[in-house]
Amino acid sequence: METIQQELTTFARRARASAGRMHPELSLVSYTLLGHLEERGGCRATDLAAHYALDKSTVSRQVSALERIELVERRVDPDDHRVQVLHLTEAGRRILAQVTESRRTAFRERLADWPEEDLVRFAAYLERYNAWQGAAHHEDRD
Image (cartoon, rainbow, N blue to C red; front, side, top):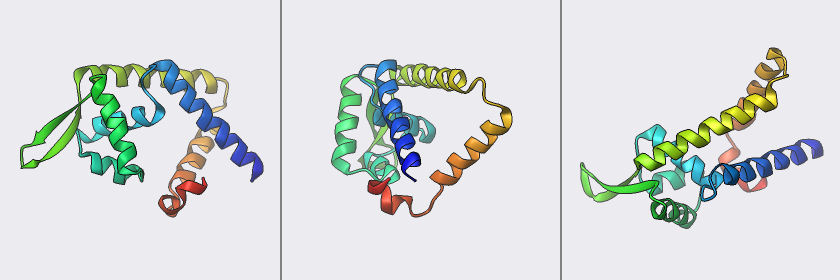
């Protein structure tokens, strides 16, 4: 268990550092939020907080930073004018695509000499680990 914990910590540290290298103003959390906005075609900040089990103030700070660098914009929900929905700007889409491609390239390079069966097992283990139903209740312990 100690080795697993150490290796996951190293993985997380490396992911945070690589996000900053790919775009100096884009943290790993920001990158993740941009990806979610793209997948959903936009959503409310409260939806982001709920989906990622983050505090609303954390999401608010991240969204404000993304708005400041013009990667995200707020639009009034056409169905409910009291609600603002977050959307990627064109610049946000470009940056997300660039960072995503850089990350994919880095993964391809890092895993290039792995046999296919190892890649399949690794992917399955990651899916199994991340699918644990108790994760939302124990995120602070991971």
